[in-house]
Length: 164
Image (cartoon, rainbow, N blue to C red; front, side, top):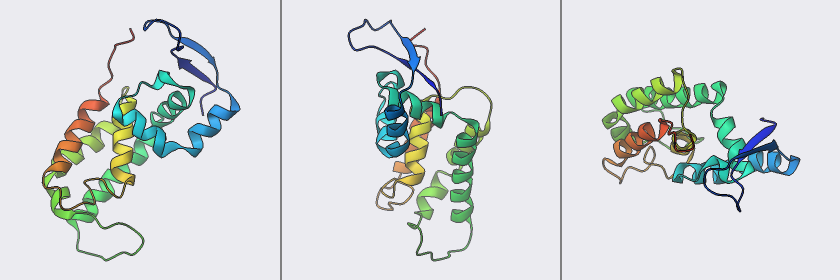
């Protein structure tokens, strides 16, 4: 986990960012509350808004996490393309939705495996897509919603330069 965080102090103007050492409590919060932090990042909360958010955003951008997300998407595609195998250990996929968004999911996996920076908002969106049992991957009554969700995640992966 990162030792330093880049933050925007509450009392500062929008252009001021500071770097400081991450506190133990902040590092613990980033590890113990990943789902909560991912939801905030996916909604567009800036990573520099808090130390735990900054640490989680940093963790999501690590190559091993990006690779794990790409592999997760590839497993979803493989499972949707394969024969039905009932499993009690996991929430079943909505295969029709997955197959309808297969090209976009494949593009998303390739983008995660590719070089370059990716925005934490998009990374968090992919993490939630894979791990939230109420995401469009698993809810079959949301016709077309998976395609929209994946398109938004692809767009959200593009880094912005608002702070430059």
